[in-house]
Image 1 (cartoon, helix red, strand yellow):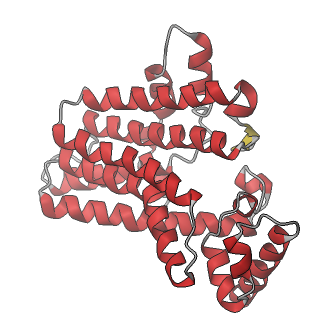
Image 2 (cartoon, helix red, strand yellow; image 1 turned 180 degrees about the vertical axis):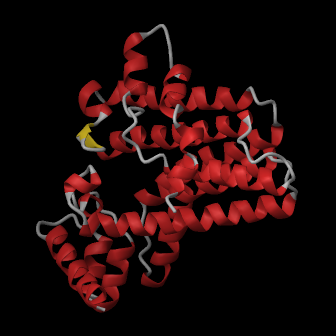
Length: 285
């Protein structure tokens, strides 16, 4: 069963509703902040929020229909995620996103940063209007985690034994925290108790980390057309993701490249080749 089909009715106006929330009397700011909300995103995070919300609504003896407050959380999840992409593109000086020119490439770094801030501000206002202190507190943690995760990504661990743990922790902060905390928020809005809120949180956490692991693998094995960004983009940014860390167990010479963040000529190509050799073994199995 296609999970997106299960939530189709709940999310068919997602992009339109978000663009309405981003309306402003400054046309350029509205154009920049709405640029990625064109219906081309996967809407993976809102889908998870809606599925958990409807499941727990049913479990708590209510109708399985999505509550208006839960839809606001679904919208906020996509807005926070997209704002983080805008800021990521600025940090990475990326030229493309989702198969088209990035916001910063079209409008410049300064306006892109402000647009990302504006999206976050509007999402925060939407959540504040729910007048639910618990939901506001839970989702404020996502913003803290995003910033901390970005700082973690800028650093690296010299100890080989600590690198994978660092990677998983960073992946939680940058990716899984949003899914985990929005899942917990809609569980709370359904009236579910602490036990079910924790279950929703852990489900979102584990799903988010798994999502990041798969996404990092796709960075090596998918084409630019499929990803909407150049292949091996993470290596070019100096990032040692899970495929590289696993490959370093078979090719210890990668550890030197990881420490210098693939900064010397030929490092990216050598690391890519090593990862693909390891992957070819698994694919044959």
